[in-house]
Amino acid sequence: MKSINFFLLSFILILFSCDYDEANSSGYIDLSSVEFAGDQYNELGENQFIYTETAPISTFSIDADGASYANVRRFIEQDQSLPPTAAVRTEELINYFNLDYGYTDATHPINLNGEISSCPWQTENKLVRIGMKAKPLNPIDTQASNFVLLIDVSGSMGSEDKLELLKSGFKDFVDQTSNEDKIAIVTYAGSAGLVLPSTSCSNKQTIKDAIETLGSGGSTAGAEGIITAYDIALENFITNGNNRIIIGTDGDFNVGISNQDELISLIEEKRDLGIFLTVLGVGRGNLNDGTLEQIANKGNGTYEYIDTIEQLHKVFIYDYSKFFTVAKDVKVQVEFNPEIVESYRLIGYENRALDTEDFEDDTEDAGEIGANQNITAIYEIVPTVASNLLNEKAFTIAVRYKLPDADTSIEMDLDINDQEVTFNQSSDFMKFTASVASFSMLLTDSEFKGSSSFSNITTWLNDINLNDEHNFKNQFKTMVQSASTL
Image (cartoon, one colour):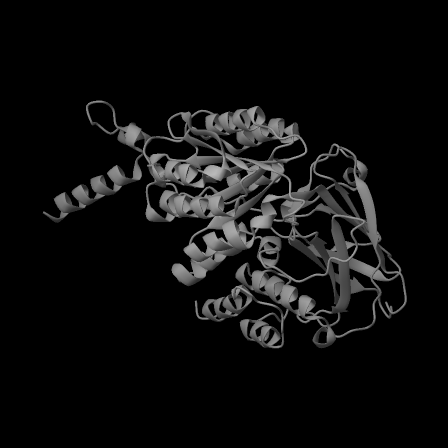
């Protein structure tokens, strides 16, 4: 009897793991095609220290995603487990948070700031923080928007934390739009279809009614959906406007073009059309995080993960301005002085590294930054023996970006002077971002974590007084405490 019950239970689990159309017309399910797939992540490793004498120049693309932080938080707070190492991308943990970096120079759409302090987990070393702040969204000057919502309605999206959560979020999103904007809705399961042609956002209820009708079932023809969404976006393209596709999916593509490399190639073919991309990942168990992150990375886009109503509000309401790109292909290049800096390590950005020559190559893709968004990068540096950085030019920082509708980049520079500041004397921006970086190193058991500890991070966070309008920074402190018990 026990063996029979086990067989029945196994069959039921298999049945619920299948997309609906894996059953043929007679209702028979082909068990040979069933896979018990889990979440999929790309293994990245971590950046090593690089000797300045050998390679004095470090070049990378910015990363404006926040998905990894939300996903890590889900593991710790909801699943009460530490995340897999590959799920942790340090730069996305840091850039999840809104920081009140000042925007004072309207000459550029992004302003730069930075500082140097001692390193709290390796006291003989130093930390360099590079910060960017994008210009705020001005409702008076905001361009009209052409949005295409591309929504996965395949069978794997049937749970409450997937399609239903997305539907709630997209309805909130509709409420943020102006009457001059327009929205089309494309869905995909076994094939792609146009649910709602491009519709003026003066008809918000019509758009929300169309969202509410969506249900799940079928396999996942993601590539066909992507192609259809770009076609619709091009048909309704607004010259000098904000043209963007917003994808909501668990990334479980299983019909047509489905492997990561082919999907990336498809996206790369589309990214020069003047259409930006937002990728929203949902769910657990078959979340294809690796593919979703790369689609956003290669498609002039950003990637967010949504697991709760609160996170939904952050993406669709609090951070609505990020749906408006103010600078694209943003690259950073730092040149270190080998007489002052023995070696350096960029913390995070492992899959955003660029070659030195890519910095001035305007055909080389890089990351985008949305209105009012902030970006932070942190280097840990090893000073040369008996060196003193005070009043010495230890390095130069250059940034290149393009305006959203331009093909030629603009360069800007930042000089940061070392004032021999200890970590305790550094700004709250340094203390907070370094705390997040230290937390990330603990989660991944980094070989460079030094004296990092959950208790040290808590101490640093308790010494910080930053604006926390939506309580996310305080929630991070709670998450650190939760992680320490797992």
